[in-house]
Image (tube, rainbow, N blue to C red; front, side, top):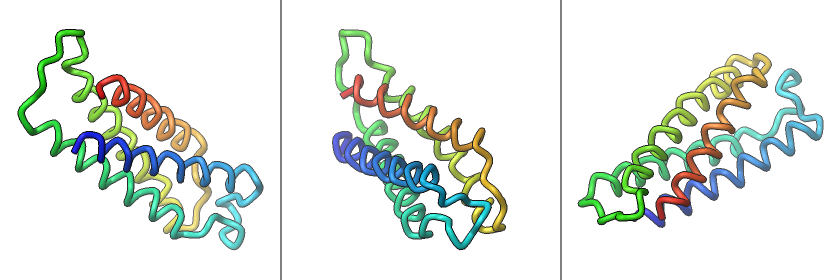
Amino acid sequence: MLVDAAILLAMAGLLGLVLVALHARGAAPSTPSRAPRWWVGALHGALGGAGFVLLLLALAAPRRAAGDGTALFGMDAAALLGAALATGVGPVIGRLRRRPISMLVLGLHATFAIMGLVVLAAFL
């Protein structure tokens, strides 16, 4: 189940790259008619949320022995990805209110998500 969570989170990350590319291309959220399609963001959020839930379920299972010092990496990855999930709510609310999305919030979201994926990869 841990590998499934990592796969879902990696797919969410790839969709996040698509959203960044669409945003950088000029589909600025400040112009709702040129913003990326809503379903790309919805799929990104759904995959990320499902991957996060799977990760939590996998971490609730009996833990494997880790003599190499990576025993708590799973919990660290879950904390970082939880922070990414929390900061990912901001752009959704901004999109629903048709307001510009803060680049600071997007940067924090991406930073937490990338750090969480790297720590999860080390945990695997």
